[in-house]
Length: 88
Image (cartoon, rainbow, N blue to C red; front, side, top):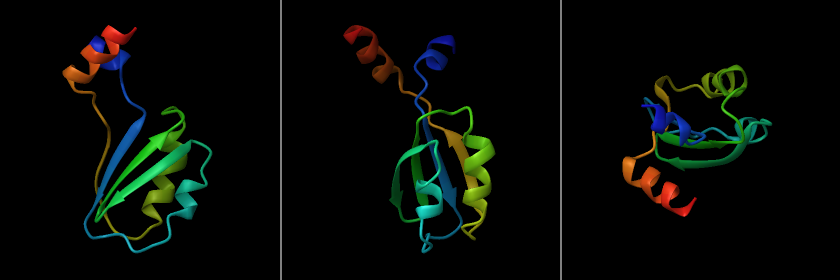
């Protein structure tokens, strides 16, 4: 568990109960957001820091309209951790 924490990615995956049709500029303009990837009713939000994500990001996501079904920090796969460790 400690190894996974050390290599934690700064990406939050969010699933909604329906596809998003709203403009995402309110989210992409947040200071902590670097990039957003959207696929139907799911967003992957790449952050500059996880520290402020809950304070800034969660209210912006709830204002989009659809119900949030899941909101979680992406956990790194052990294979990805191994590759990153070998490169260090």
